[in-house]
Amino acid sequence: MNTFRIVGIFSDSMYPTTTKKITGVLLSNGTRESINQVIISLDGVCQYYYIDPDFRKRYIESVHIDNFPSYVRSKNCTEFDTLLTLPIFYD
Image (tube, rainbow, N blue to C red):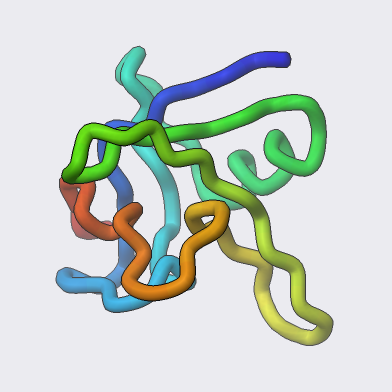
């Protein structure tokens, strides 16, 4: 299983308030992946994680809801998603 570290996110919103606004991710090796690439990889055999503000390793998951675009979020997230605390690059 391949595992990738996310170090930044891309969004079409300057200040996203939800992970549904994420359009892509920046990986620790400098590669940019679209959110569709990440979702396909997550649904396959890859894992993605990031380090949250408390220095904990947090994994992400893909979310699929009928009649809505798929998106990603942190696993076991119940409140504010700390994925949004990573550096944001405006698309």
